[in-house]
Image 1 (cartoon, helix red, strand yellow):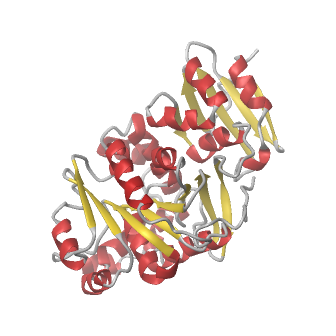
Image 2 (image 1 turned 180 degrees about the vertical axis):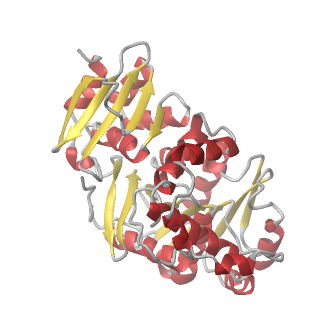
Length: 400
């Protein structure tokens, strides 16, 4: 018999709250010190079976018995356990977190949800939780909504948080030949707002997601509240020696995978600090899930190309005209977006707020407590008010 706590979760599985793109999923569950069990999801049902070595799991979840009991008592316990490293999620986090959502037993609007919404650009995968003014979380290049799992847990007590997989990444649509530039991503964010019945929302973005958050503010100021930017990607001010070469390269070359999967994975895990364990390993899992597909590689190269080639004169001119309040969080050890950019931002936006932390390029994972406290205080100072930020019901529910 499976451990009783796993059976409790399985018995309250809600297929409407679980999104399996293929319609089926295998999740390997481990209660430390006991045998592994597989949660088999198919045809809207979940069954537990003893783990089978011939059955490859789509996602793996492991925790001690006390943590599993906390998850069974309150799904927020699972999010907190993940943040603290007591719950280990590997491989497909869309399915792993979806399992937490679908077995929570909650039917409240603020429940944790993992699913997708339909927009004019195609299906966009989202993770939602909490109640209050809506806050949209936008990930960086090569990342997914999983990079904001601790942020969802930290903010859901005061806000309705929506973490998004931008098109081309994670479990969202990946059209061949799409622009994958800030205006394209901004249209996707506006589409998510429409699908969720949201008129106006705060934006929080990391790295490339920060650049997208700014673009939403440029293009849709009436729909944008406050903007929190975590080590945001900004147009280069120095000379770009490879611009002509990069401009000539076509992102569609990414449709071809030259190196074998094992070689790609080994390289990525070796160059990412902590890429074989902890939160960094989870991030690498998510990156590889998309990058090891032809469409995911093409999208990655297109977005990277656009970051490198962005016109600095146009960007910095537009930044000066940004409406609304902005918070910039910088990592003193960030090698991708050096903290020296803060001086140029202060010149362009003298009214913006700045926070410097002893971390690298992903403040929400490397310095979560200080980052989330600062973001929560910043967003709470200006409630969206009235019906401007309210959800018009649950306009789009997770699909499976």
